[in-house]
Length: 387
Image (cartoon, rainbow, N blue to C red):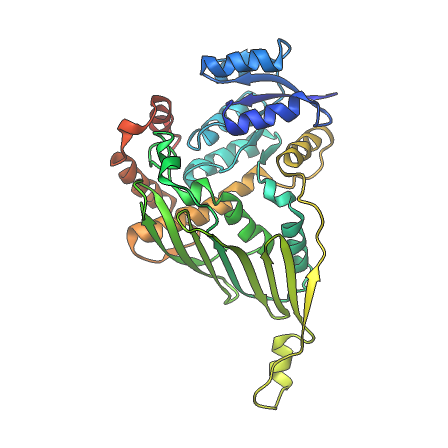
């Protein structure tokens, strides 16, 4: 294969972003070969902006079976990601999906199984993994510089959304349309980075979600979740969409100090000796280890979406390992599903997640959803499902 012929499914905001850098030839080894969208106005835009060399399809299946593409970049509503990925794998296509992986983990697990059976390259658009701040954080933790993790704390409330934002589309902030609120729409990157940088998934969680707090919406827009890890560490995740000014602070405490990512800076308060060693040897009563504040140099903002697409393309052409394997999308989704399930059941949630229970609880919310506001295409995608 000289070049990967890519088809983009969905010409909304994200699909349009991807086709623009692809048509400019900014991904070495890839060419934009086709686009698919059911809306005539978006295909008209594609004709005028992308030219006749890029094939246009109203039907996704027709594009998948056309023989004109080698891989697809799926940029459609949340519910449809697994369904369309599974179909693409059946047609022998490589797949790159936008985040989130899906809405519920049972659906995503089916997608992962289809990917494994297909032996195709499967990636997810976790573009924040290219951010050098989080790459350096992951390196410091995995290399042992921080020592054993004792606590994680992420406050991410810088997602301010007004009522007019939610009113701009009938599908927004509905269970039938988006399948959730801040956790599924704004936070997938943070939920991914939380476990990717630390290398930890919880053993259990207790969460409290508020639905439509200070806003006229159905879904969660204020969340506080507490987690426990196998090694005894604990964690806290706080997020909302109505606070302004908001905060974005990720703090990880370990045996050798504390690391904070905030304001595009990485600061390491490094202990001269590990706390466990100091505690074993110190006899002076009050006291604590000597600590050095280190501003860790981090340069650039990362290659973001373009970098993930380049990485996926090179994996197809050269077999290089993916920075963001699609199969890992289930991890962050498990965290968000657990937060909702804990709230709906008013109880602890153990990991692995009870996927059938979450699915049934989600269906209860969808049944009560204001589907009169939801565009027909979203209702259809939800009704089809894959569970």
